[in-house]
Length: 414
Length: 148
Image 1 (cartoon, chains in turn red, purple):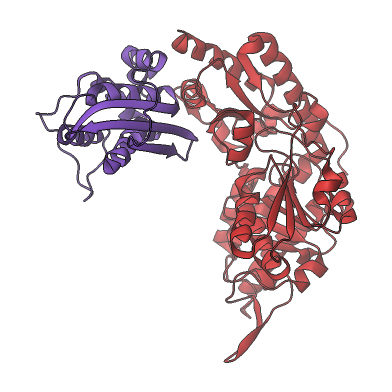
Image 2 (cartoon, rainbow over the protein chains, first blue to last red):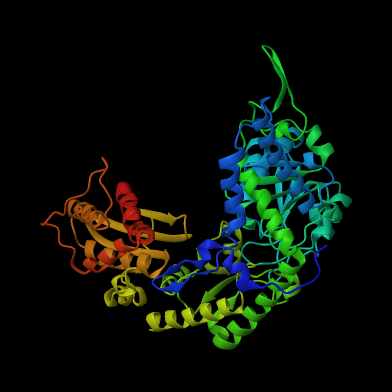
């Protein structure tokens, strides 16, 4: 356990080469970490050093260099195991990204276990990655989707949850909305799923980089997250699943590494986790993910969360004070149930135009539907701007954002 | 970095604030919907074509200042024009946006085709992400013409 402490954001920023970059003589204000995060020097170095010194195939060659590479790769798996408090290292499956992780569950578990009429419950705040794979099973198998609605302040409306879950086979939900910033009561939702006899699948993409994660305390069955949202490289994602579920499932992709034996008349699968890791994995990226996990663990996930609560509170207070009803911040007002990700509307300026103007001040925000079109329709908008803060952002970044918003008003004032 | 004044020219902002030819045309008027999957913007284009002339056009949907003003200027530019001239204008406009032809070659500007106010959108090319915004209504127009 790391002792509670305040993050030294200035020192942290110095560890991210890209954040030291200036454009047109001014520093970059990167507020798009819900999309993807910048990389600290330790991650860049870990990947370079691995490629310079230890790179070799993993799990399939006898020479000592290959054994060394395998140790680096499997070492990262153990780091990830501890990072999310999984019971066993082989419950950690490396994928291409969190989208593939969720697809893996829907495809491999879903196709083997779901039949026409079986109910899968989702929520109105899911990312497309936790919607479309299930829509594909609607088309293929005739499963039925039910949706947990939202309250006016962008939390899950759990008043009808028992009846929505009644007879359901799966409850798949996000731990934190990539649009609203809402943090959901994961432990309670897992318990409700299990009480109804359903599996609990957690999309941890937005939650894991910002909070202490304990999949055993949650009581979840599967959990997906990605490396690139937690200071690691893109190209690798994680699926965690309970051992007995992963063991009982058919494989996902077929090929090298995932087999115990292949004959002319068939094959048998390898043990976990190789069973779900067909082909050469993103070896260097997995090593980079391990370094990112070390970096975050060193800072302390509880400290990161505490810092983001502070930034989120400041952002809500200062933006509201400064712009009043000209800014519409979506999602909960209570920092205890939200992260530092803010979708917003500003006057009647389209988010695309807004982000273009903010870019003149080097303020990087996302504009669009954030891969959550059903939620956008509920909010009654085609798009929002989204500012998302991370461990390398502080309250001065909020102020820079606010100043840049002022300049947008000047251009689009009618 | 190119300046915003290249993008947000006054005439563009005027079309954004006061879009021309907004509305719908009742079926069976040719109607196409265009989506920009990047940002979720949607544009509706309705046509009334008689004797190979676009006698009326209406534009609906939501979008950013660039997509809305481009649609507005487009509607002004094509109303009352023969379909062949409209198609030539689409080609000329795509050339202005640095979009290559079907074979991947640059579209040479046809001096016969006048762009008028649409010239104001030339600055969009300096902001490559916004080219899709500017061309959304034009691609939707082609879809609607295909139904006419």
